[in-house]
Length: 413
Length: 156
Image 1 (cartoon, rainbow over the protein chains, first blue to last red):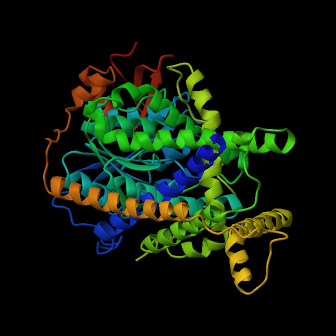
Image 2 (cartoon, rainbow over the protein chains, first blue to last red):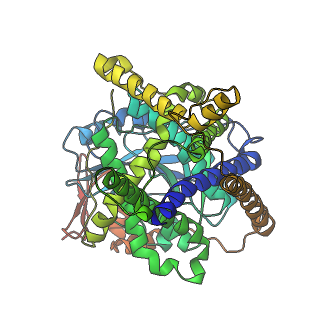
C-alpha cells in the first residue's frame, strides 16, 4: 500500500506538471507570440527613458570585453553601463578601466574585496542615473534588441516590477552542454510561459532581467544573505504585488557548466535558494493577502516532496533486492508498465512543443534531438538529488551569512 | 529573423574517449526509452501470434489508470484555458493598482545609508569609483578613481 502510494505520486506528479507546462506554454504562445513582431522588430516606444545596464563581474577577464561590446551595441538610444568589479583577483578591473576609454557609456565601480553579486547590484542601483536596471552576468552576451523589448513592458505597465528575459546556452561542445540546451528550451522556457499564465513566476533569470528601481526600493533591494538573490527578489516583489513578466525576445547568450562537478554545484545552489526563500517567507505566504503566490508555492513544495518520495522509492527498491520487505513496502521490479511508456511519450512531446515554440528565436534546436533524451535526467534526477541535499543544507545555514562569488565552471572554450 | 548565434561548439576538443562515452551513453538512454515501450511491443507481437510470456508477461493496460491519465491531461488543459480566460477578462487593459513614481536619488541613498549630497553627487557623476565596506557589508567609503582622485567627504 505504502509503496503503491509512493509510486503513484512519483508517476502522476511529473506527468501532471509536464501537461500543465505544455498547455500553459501553448496558451501563452498562441496569445502572445504567434502573431507578435519578430525579435528584430521590437516595439516603437512612445518615449525612451534612460536605462542602466548592470554587469557585476568577478574574475571575468576572459569574457568581459565581449560582454561590454554586446552591451554597447544595444539598439536603444539612451543608456549607461555600470560594471561592478567585485574583488576580482585577475585583470578584470584593469580591463574595465581601459574600456571606459572605448565606451563613453561605461562607468566602473571597484570593490577591493569580493562582496557578492547582490551587493554589486545594490551598489549599481545606488549609482544608477535611471529608473530602469537591466542586469546581466559578466560572462553573458545581451542580444542587440533585448533592452528595447524589456523596456517596452515597463512603459506599458506601471505595476511591472521586473521583466525576465530568455537565456540561451552558448557552450554546446559536450554532452552536458547539449542536454542543458534541451533543458532550457523544453523545461525552463515552457515553465516561464506557463507560470505567466497562472500569474506568478517562481523566479526571474538572474542572468537577464530588468527591474524598475522604485519597485526594488519598496522591497529594500536585493538581500545579500541569500544564495540565489534572483529567487528571493522575485518572491518579495510579487508578495508586494508587483508584476513580473517574461519576454522571450530578450535573448541573452550564457555560459553553463560542462562538468558534472560544475553542474552539481550550480544546481545545488539553485535548490538551496528555493529552500531558503520558502523557509524565510512561508509565514507571509500563508496569508490571504499573498494568495496569488500560492500556485508557485504549492508547485514548489510538491517538487520537494516528490524528491523525497523518489529517494524513498530508490531506497526501498535497493533494500528489496537484498533483504526481505513486507509486501506493502515492496517496490516492483524493473519490468516497464504502460505508465513508463506514457511518461516517455510525454517527455518527447514536451520537447517537440518547445522546438516548435523556440523556432521563432533560434533555429537548429531540433538538431539537439538526439541528445534530448537526457533532459528528463537533467531536470528531474539532478533536481531530485540536489533538493534532497539542499533542504538540510539550507535549514542548517546560519542566517545572515553573506553569499559571495565562486568562479563557476564555464565549459569547454 | 532568428538570432545571430554566438555558439561555442568544439566537440573535437574533447578526447575521443569522452566523445565515445557521450554517444554510447545517449544511445543507451534511447534504448532505455525504447524499453519503456516493451508492453506495447508485447501486445503487437501477441496480435501476430508471437507470445513473449516466457520472458515478459503481456500487461493489458489497466483501464482505470489509462482513464485517469486522460482525465489529468484534459483537466490540465481545462484549468489552464479557463484560468487564462478569467485573468484576461478580469485584468486585461485594467490597472487595479497604482504604479510608483521614480524614487528621488536622496531617498535611494538613504536606503543604503548614504545621506550627504556630495557623496550622492559622486555616485551619480563619476565614471570610475571604488567602494569600501565594513565586515557587515555597510558602505563606509566612496572614492572617485582617476587622474585627480576625489574622496567622499563623509568618509570615515
